[in-house]
Image 1 (tube, rainbow, N blue to C red):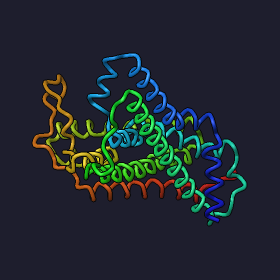
Image 2 (image 1 turned 90 degrees about the vertical axis):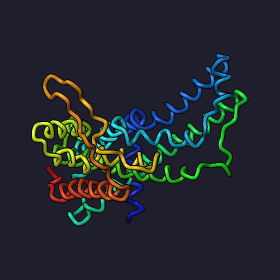
Image 3 (image 1 turned 30 degrees about the vertical axis):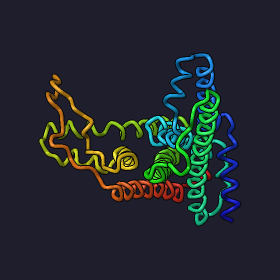
Amino acid sequence: MIGSLFRAEWKKVTGNRWLVGCLIWIWPLGALSVALGLLLLGILSDDIHQRMIDNPARWTDSSLLFWTIPNSIIGRLIIICFATVLFAGEYRWGTWKNLLPRQGRLTLIVMKFITLAVFIMLVFVLTSLVWVLARGVVQLSVGGAYPPALDEIPSNYWRRLVLQLITAFLSTLIIAGIAALIALVTRSIIAGVVVGLGAAVIDGVIGAALLIFYAASGLRFFPSLFRFTITYNVDNLLNWALSQESSPVLSNIDIQNNEIFGNLKLDPPLAGNSMPVSLLILVLWMLLLVGLAAYSFYRQDITE
């Protein structure tokens, strides 16, 4: 039963070719296009040709490059659009009207989330492979090296890769949970996309709002709430992957001599979360949002 459900959801996810092409397949195709552009530059420009030889790209860095996308604000907006169309589209296309009794709904909705996340992860695995191979072809074409050798891979590479994969998977499910919840409540693709994009933007700018509350009240309680946001914990995990240390809370916001707020800065900065704490917070966000979406679907009269 699980296998047949997965196959059915996979067909739905991949069935809308325009949607998948515009929002998903654009990444591997974009990676290939950029590599071809670099190849042409290396052939046509002696300066760039020599630079590629003197400062060769590293395949380890190339393999990590595109994993920043699902963890970025742009990636979140794309995932929200994609997930909203998939979930709200079920109402538009009427595929849920003749659905199962309530006891089968939870399995269906959870499988839809899993299929969506697996599909997006596979797309970025493919994108990374395309970029690594294409970048290697570019380097070899100009006569350059493509380090490191397999026995010279940096000791922190695998930790960085695994942590970025885990963060991308959790981030995808969290953003899909937001999109699905809104889509299930509104039953509208347009409303779901608009509200979903708004939710993603709000999460991204909430730090500034918390600093304003801090400036008005002097209470460090407000900026400390930023520790629990999706944005901070995703960024913090990526920082752990890169430098093995946490990101200070809101240390990137420093407003000087503003007419309204004066000097707006968190000083001294709050210490950041540990890696396990950030992982736990993201898992809890994922369970909360996916759970709310599943509960909403379970309680609905989908025959309307």
